[in-house]
Image 1 (cartoon, rainbow, N blue to C red):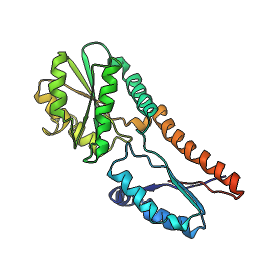
Image 2 (image 1 turned 180 degrees about the vertical axis):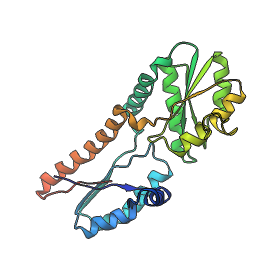
Image 3 (image 1 turned 45 degrees about the vertical axis):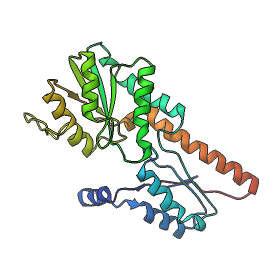
Image 4 (image 1 turned 120 degrees about the horizontal axis):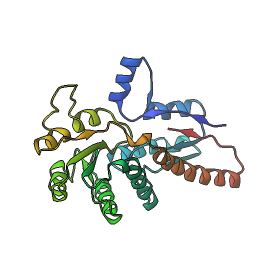
Length: 250
């Protein structure tokens, strides 16, 4: 009974998908315009961002420009918002990688990183992992602190024989293949500036797992929980005001 629509925040990705697959996907502004043109009165936006970084803020600001054109509008929370969200994500990534918990393997999750204050989520994840006894797990973003050099410095304290690299990103795309795995093909050496390249230079032979955490059902469930929270509030308000509502999800 809902109208469901998808939009991307990255125009670069939109252009690539159109060029490679001839598939047209709206950007956020186009999606908002189409919602207005289609007579949508109630708009729910559920982002699939990891945190409240600049991209999330840009989305919220762009949506706010159209607020007056809808009777009701709400923007859901990103993945890592509540304490329960952090607990769920940590449980998901440690459960998925428990085969490496052999006392000799370090597991490093590479995030994107941001200059926004939201970058603190990486340090918070690391802190909770340590509190829970996952001392062989490390979090290192590409574009912020703690850097891969910080991770290496801490990792050397554990005398690990093996390192597993995996993206702490919803989708394993260019960052996972290039910044993490070094863009290497069979028989090639990874880019020296990549996580893989730097770990190899430090004497390790990393195993790169090219899988985004969006593939975990528990992570997807966090987004659904956030969506349920704002829709429940919506329908409560609608029952009170006795008017129909349409869910228009992004």
